[in-house]
Image: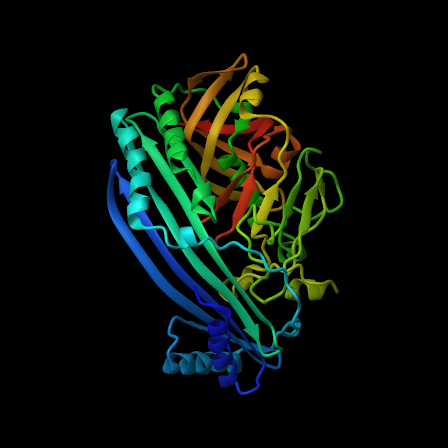
Amino acid sequence: MIDEKEARKITEAILARCKGNPAEVTLLTLDTALTRFANNIIHQNVAERDAEVSLRYLIGKKIGTATTNRLDQAGLDELVRRAKTNAQASPEDPNYPGLPEPAAYQHVNSWDSNTASYSAEKRARAVGVVCHVAAEKGLIASGALTTGSGDTVVANSQGVFAHHSRTNADFQTVVMSHDSSGWSQGSAWKITELDVESLGKRAIDTAERGHNPVKIEPGEYTVILEHYATDDLLSSLNFYGMGAQAVQEGHSWMNDRLGQQVMSPQVNIWDDGCNTAGAPLPFDYEGVPKQKVDIVKEGVVIGPVYDRYSAAKEGKTSTGHATPITFRGFGPIAAHLFMGPGSATVEEMVQSTQKGLYINRFWYTRLVHPRECVITGMTRDGVFMIENGEIAYPVKNLRYTMPYVQALANVEAVGKTAHLLIGEFGGISTRVPALKIKGFNFTGSTV
């Protein structure tokens, strides 16, 4: 962790090297440790400490960027030299709105000293329970428990300075037998909110119940999606259309749907970077304070999130959703997504289903058609047939091809409990419930 005083010293040293030229500095620090296990044995403990500094250097509307992880004097000199050279060689961007002015942002606590100092021994004890139980049942557990901390700092020559420290914890495991598997994941910014043993036993139970899966014919089924699969729905809709740039370029699923009710009234989706129930960061990578943004409200598409560039094109204000400099070409993105919970438990969803499929998660999902957000992918790590309100038997994995907007239009029930998941790509977080969806389209099955 670097405190505010040290962060100011570093960013001011870089901006001073720009000699009054408009510039923006992003400083990211990372201090993380991981205990990895496979075949019921811990085989790796690693720890990493790093810092990354990015500089955006402006000459009029010509922009140059550069990145380094050297914080010594020579490293900072080289950073500025490369960013300036890149700016000189770049064409002007007539739409560039300039650097933001200082604005007050909400200070949010997402730092837990217990998580930041969590030892390798404690991680080993937690993981060891999962390995031991899996071995007792003749199953093979693999996965990782990660804990860490970091800082995000943004400063610019206009006087913006924003600093946020955070901690994180994540556990993932896959448990396998010769013909079945189970998987679970949990994320938190406090290690005490991560029940590793319970998550491990859940994956073990799924693998145990999955022996001798039956091949079934593809077709349309009512599905009960665990929150891991819901995460895939929400994340895909995010990457393929919740940002204003995608809407402006015409390839978002929001195009021609803004203001319309295209999902179930039970579906509510919003982004809130200041909510401690997620993995908060109260400002974006331009130092703009994050706003809570309703994206879908009672099934009605409200609108996308904005960074300054996309907002300026429409004469609007940024909602605080700029990505890091190295990903700025993707446009704004919702990094702290929530789906509102409902009133049903997963057990009640199963009991209300005459015939359908219980699905633990999706994987290898790929975009087929952006405007409809048609996704194809496979089920994995736990698929079961539901008959007459009960889990009847395990089935083999299936390929599905489904428009995700249509899937959320077909929602019949929303789970009463939402779970936090933090993705490996950019630390994007979702807090999502389970869903019951009718008419989910499966287009193939495994042998």
